[in-house]
Image (cartoon, rainbow, N blue to C red; front, side):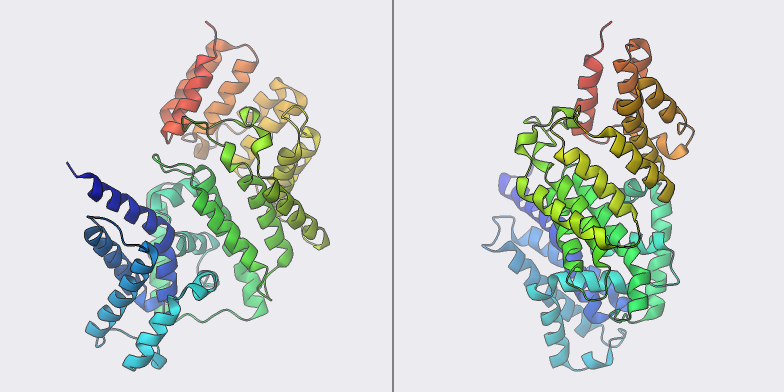
Length: 420
């Protein structure tokens, strides 16, 4: 059995790995080129292992600074040892420029710029949009293959194949250049926005069984989406729409779980505790989207989130407006999850029978078979309609598919509401 200090050190390193490893890898990869991506990942991994060993009797005063120094030193050491076998950009030929470049890349002032620049740079035109997004989430956001698979509602093997193809293409490129052409930025921006969207979702309601709610990931996604607004060539309207969506949802984070660490449905959340500052920020972002000429999924999802966030209660929600927005969203970006949420809105607007019919219309989609919230939605409708015998096995299915204790207990509470 490990002693408490060792456990504390391990927990701290794991937390830092989640928050800092992607930033360190993106910084080193940007400085050293994509052909040296494995080296950048090895340097960061070695630094984290060193931290776990060095901190077993207690962490340093500034763990992040310690990790930065360790990653920098390890990267320089690996480059020195493998210089004969490592292809570096010409400007890094000398020892002095190598050290200063790595040092500058890992400085805090380059943090956001490194991540965003690399996001645009790795969206190579020969890769599919799905592969571009997968690379961003794995390399630059630090999500695991399993987490990415959950985000796409796919199997892990499909994600690993995407990563393999993407890494191979980056190796062929040898070096990435900062994207500065307006046409290239416009072509690559949708993948960047979608990656940030999935990053936020992983923090908002992710697949980690021990920690399904991770506000730090949500904050990261919001920080990066708002930073897009400072870049001259990006679409300010779409960045505003995505930022609005993040603000509305982030405002509810404090009420997403109860004191026992169990997810609370929207109807049970204390709206007085929602973050008024974030809600106002969301409204401000959303107002900026009115000047655009193109309607995107981010506009529609932000509009839906706004209706939920500004309503005094579930009953007072403008469900007619929500259904109209979901209709437009499904027409623009059809997916089984959008169809599921649209069906729930229809149930509120037109009644449980209409909602059930909308759910059953997408029941044959294989991507929903292992999605616990599909079975929960069906169970809730049957329970509310008084069909206890139909609801019970549906709740059992949702419980069996739950990804965390926070989900499982929430579903079990629903099941307990049934009367024999």
